Image (tube, rainbow, N blue to C red):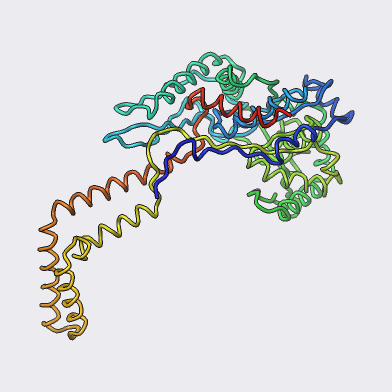
Length: 453
């Protein structure tokens, strides 16, 4: 069964239900939380609702988090804060573009926006760049909105090419591209967050008893299912910690207990779980995750309960989840693997079963030959003659239906080509600037309406 890759496959998911979010906001942050916010220039006179992601041009499922943060702010008066996960080494310069190639085939090409990427180095420690404009050659963009979106991305990146680093450049460009869709909230860099006393205090706890930090972390990883997180290395005195050790615009390294003593003056940054722990302890009063963050944050809660004896229900900002699926309207149908397999079986039957071509007499004659072949001695000349007669019969049937078989083969090849397009048609992770603004506004309005109370 084919399905059209269109709005009928769209979805918007909240957990818990959106009408509960406003009541979840923490109303009395601790003195330590208020001090942390002052250190970072965040509001301390009203609750903070926070969300965040890596520095890249996110897909609509991520955009939904930013829309939700603004919607909660609209409904409750909380301050929206957008966290840039700039200690990550994500492929910030990679851009996948759907194109129409030869013979109208829908394909994906990957482009690098800059050739100055330092692999495995934090994006927030890499330099801003003058973007390279993708060259499509003889191909063309699959949709007008993609061409427009690509042009807007390049212009926005050029506008911010004097930013302090690549993460600030990309984040600034992404926020510009959201203008008119979502008002921009206060932006907070994770690397900037490492200068706050609250982060230093957590690092000191790791330094004081690294084994307790690592073993409780690993216990949480083992106890919680469905997150994909790996345990830390604990081997004798070699104890890995949930930190990155940073050294300028160089590949980041995993941090170990001895690093906190031997390289005390180096820069350290939190890995995912410690980062979320920090912001939920001190940085916000409601944190909005996507599906991935919601899965691993259960590990965060278990770890903090085991390690620091915190009660997630009272000592951490509540965490909620929102995600959305929006697909680009390519106007083509999705061919499923089952549909392709069924077509291949049908074409094969047409070539080997005359009944599939409406030749009942020939089908009966073939069946008699098959039965005679089965009854003949396996190595006899009689069996060889019968086998040859069966193939001659099939060749005569195929010759009479040459055009029909050729059309069936062409249909099968076309269906195989369309089946190869299915991952493109069903992909939900295209950069949001590739979508029509009307579609993004509709998504925003749905989120605003759901969180209006």
